Length: 351
Image 1 (cartoon, one colour):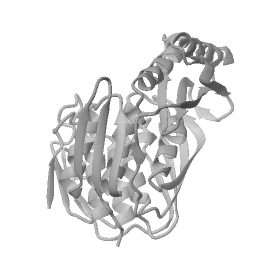
Image 2 (tube, helix red, strand yellow; image 1 turned 180 degrees about the vertical axis):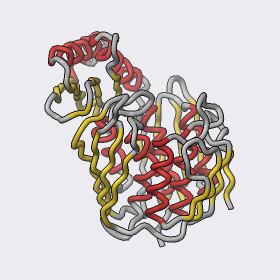
Image 3 (cartoon, helix red, strand yellow; image 1 turned 135 degrees about the vertical axis):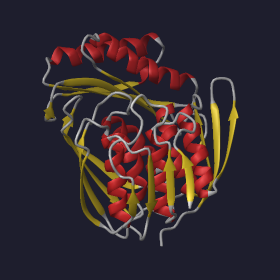
Image 4 (tube, one colour; image 1 turned 90 degrees about the horizontal axis):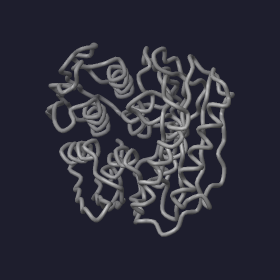
């Protein structure tokens, strides 16, 4: 049985999500203890519990300790996931994006196409917005051979949640390795400003502020289109900005979430500054994407290479965890304003 100390590294929910996903794929029994021990409210929260529940349902797992507040679980997967339709309700404004971080690698291993409908938070603090998942992460993952699409039916903001996201995933293993070197050309910059149940001028000010910041940094000539989405249905009021730059090797993103008391101009500028920092590093992926691609690098067939602006504690934790559980080999090289991550994947094939 694999044993993982949930307080390792940054000690958050990511450790649990990745551990359970990898155990389900490799059909290994798993014990995770000290779950979220470093958080002010340790133990399983609803978004973690529901991700484990769905994965357990997919692989027919026996699970001990599956309740809110639990600091230890034992997970015993039994079979390969089956294609079909599934539902998940996080029950709060818990992040759908982080839920997908755990569940998508497992969905891709099913014996047939999977359709999953999730209720929860689409745009919440401490999590990539769902629009980032659609416009940055999924295109990057397609390079590995991932076959999936995300559709937003309804936005859901803190504290009510209630967003609805549907995911369609097709069998995708074995994954191909990727080689994403530092970029030499920017092909264009796009933006999406989403707004619900608030005046449209808030979104317009975000767009203008983001555009101004990019122009001041010397990237104005690459701007192609900024769209305002005010039509997607939503529970509650909310807004934010997601920007992305397509380069000759990959896609870089930057985002910012609106909050009560936070000026629209600050929201737009924050998203632009994150993108500008990634562009200046000449990286192939941004820091959020690195957190997410590590597991795919570990599972792919052969050697993958990506460059990011920095190695965050989240990415290091994910890398260490993937190494322990899968046996994939990783190497990190740090340069002036960038890090290079190499992985020799295990060539995972579901059986």
